Length: 221
Image (cartoon, rainbow, N blue to C red; front, side):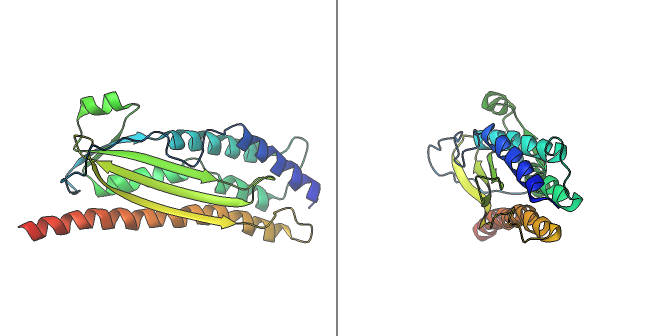
């Protein structure tokens, strides 16, 4: 494998990151709770979901990164294992489908709304602000990060609690000359593994949050 080919692809992916600077790693679209809510979470509730600006920006960023990984660098060939690793680790639907699936398995009904006005009009039992952030390797960046947070509010938009999962890893440069294609692919695959680990953390956090609500109801009966 020619190292120049890998360098070219990584440079292309760097362009994908630069083109989508909207994913900042901060929650720029959050609700301001008036007070802590007395409401507890339970499986019978209906849930309305809003995406934070981070989530929208991250979906755009991953979509571009994924498309460029699929297209590859113009006029170059790259080992299929490395290309597949880049493509798999940038799947734009992995996190969002996982997070929504976790909510759907936990609550009676989950609906995603385009804006808060539509959500308020629908009047679900619980509102969730879903914040997802991902950062992948590029020629300028070797720190890989995934962070997922679901912030829960009651029907009056008062704060109930959070479910979250996160991971961060500093990766060595993928374009080091003495690495084999198999070693490079395995390193790039760590991006997807980090995302999955963070999503599994999220699942555990969500179950603990709902379980705490169940425990409070049992104690009060």
